[in-house]
Amino acid sequence: MPDDFYEQTPDANIRATEAVMNTMRTADLLFDRIGRLLRPLGVSAAGGLVLGLLRDNGPLSPSELGDRLIVTRATVTGVVDSLEQRGLVRRSPNPADRRSVLVEITPPGLTVVQDLRVLVHRNERDWMHVLSDAELETYVELLHRIQDNVTAE
Image (cartoon, rainbow, N blue to C red):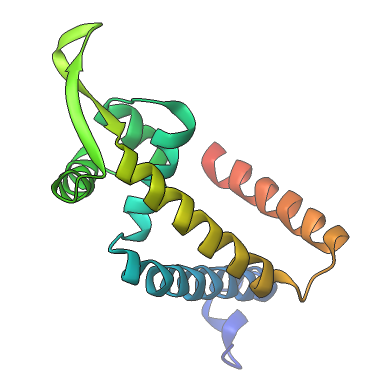
């Protein structure tokens, strides 16, 4: 942090700024590593999340996927288009609402999501082994508190 941090922003908190910056850097590093892990499988990180949601929850509408991923509908459409072109998901009419579609995972998509979960979860274990299980539990609790506070604003 610059020597004149408090002169620039007297009501700030240098530790809060360092925490946010390091949280973002860590997230960027992890997102990049996950992207590199998934590249050989031909799936983006967002695509992997969509496949996981469909595998765990069954068919979902594009708007439900967007709500769960916290991304725009346009982003969901692009991800689903890409997965559909690879035969990993398919769109089908929504029996509850003829104006909408449901996205469902295909058998090849189930295989890919299983492979990517094994790959990612094994690496997550390796990345986080520098913390004990108790530290990981505390870390997750602290992250949830921050997330709750940020979303409450």
